[in-house]
Image (tube, rainbow, N blue to C red; front, side, top):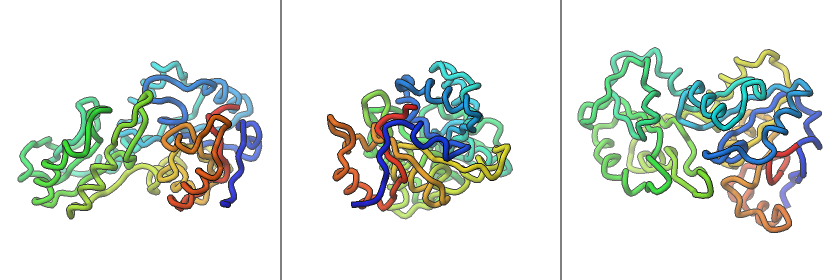
Length: 280
């Protein structure tokens, strides 16, 4: 049996940490509304002067996500900052000049090229760079994108994947994400750069925002592939929330330890703690 600690409440371990890197989708909200007890948990941490950074693989700039959180009822005083994979993408491209860009994603994500020196083109022959923010909605599929990806790869443009997630849960439905399209593009010979968890840039950017550089950090997320792997690569302690994309490990009594143990072995990423929902 793999060694992880199952806890019921964050209050059991929070005193060991000064700073919390918390995922959004699957931990704080489901894309539609906040989960129960989230605001109370954040208030409890802030009462003890803990630092809270939301790290998310959302392919949108951080300012856009802050507005969404406010619409969900999550006010700014409950966290320190938001760092998104979309923000890292924009920061990485801001100094690039005169790029012809092909966009894959819904129009709501196209703000990601605002302020950049890029020309959006639709002819694959003239593409320098693909910015992949992911499919249009929860009924979309990889099959819908294979023709354009197979055409684009003939001209060898680099793809920027601004959301390494392959799946996410919106409401109660699973939907595919940009990472699945990027994986296929690589399989057919394309080159991809990923920005977001578990890759280093999003952590380095967050470290630069921290007022105190030596705070002990706990990473909280629902993905073994991204949140927990990223924490392990950064040598940070982590807490897996099992009510998100790995909800199959839950049963009516809580977490099925054998199921979770098998999943951790398969993914080869182990958290320090496991908890069903984020609660204090």
